[in-house]
Amino acid sequence: MRLLFTLPVVLMAVALPSLAQAQSSSCSPYDSDAHEQAQAMTLKASSPKQPVHFQSEAKACPAKGTCRWKQRSYLIQADTVLAGPEQNGFRCAHYVTAKGKPMAGFLPSANLEPAKAPKTLDLAFLTGRWVAGENDITFTAGANGLVHAEGTATYTSETTANTGDFSGDTTPGGEELRFGNPQAEDECLVTVQRRGPYLLVSDNLRCGGLNVSFRGLYVRVKTQ
Image (cartoon, rainbow, N blue to C red; front, side, top):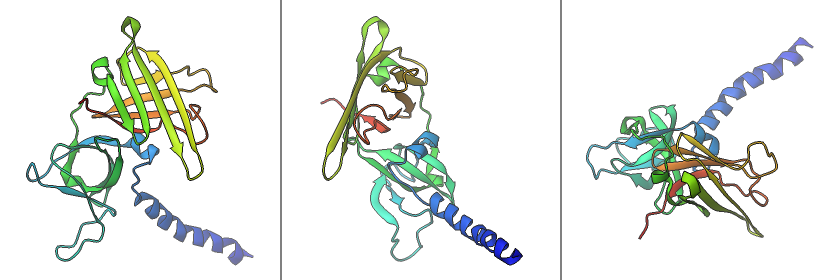
């Protein structure tokens, strides 16, 4: 009886490290939890035009031969990412292209340094149209010094496309803005934070149809 009781415990002790290792090696562009915990960091390279490639694995490429986990996507000097904790000399880094496409991959920690960027959400920084994939939020100056926000979000599957939207006003400034009533659990509530050149947006999953959410990293679209 004692052997039957202790055997599962031994198996769990062996399996848990493998599970933890598998979880820590993932680096997804759509990991909202990772976005929340990541730090804004700036890329530094040996020269201004020297590319630093994303990798699918947190390990160094061989000195010779093909590096199978080296991706085609790369960044250059002064690009800003949101980077997670260090893993074997690498960090999972999140980046958003000018068109709002999220990207993620491992970058060498030696090529990253903390970004020197303000966190204040003032009107000058917010004003404009911000995108994250198919989602869209526009900030404009409202009445009495407020900032006005209007957003649309879409979730598309093979069979349907669900949508959602929000609009609201709040006082600009500080490190976090909320659009909606935090006391109303069944109403849409959108929270906005600044991370370097990006907006980190979250919501309470009450802003539209099934699976619709404003969560993500947003980049401001440059005016023509």
